[in-house]
Image (cartoon, rainbow, N blue to C red):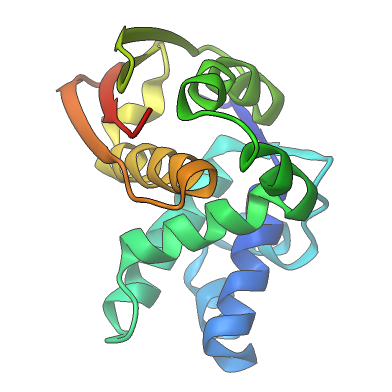
Length: 186
């Protein structure tokens, strides 16, 4: 799966979130939990550069361990905070002016801006408040941590738009596909 890459913006967001929430010591522990070949990715990430997807996978596993030892924030909440941070100030201001439907229609474009390699996303609106996102041909869904990342990222994205938590449910999951239903306010 070495042909898959992810933009550094996710690593930058994770680094900043861990430092802000838990401090330098916790960040050092997180870095030490990563395989040596990926430690520099978290330390020196550049938001516009491409990094191996397995570096993100290792980072997510390290974050899960970090969150498990922290009673004040769970792993899902940590993923949502990283997503919100990654959205950034300008983009979040734009998102707040749009509808959940409009934002969810942009998920395939966002996917293509942050990932390289096989994998795609399609969007189908079931009605005014329900949207189905279908992710295909992405072998990292074999790791359940990616299902959680997807659900939390979609929840954070729609919450940024509406100010309310949507209902995000995985309808189907395979080793390389995920169907996710998002029920949101109109």
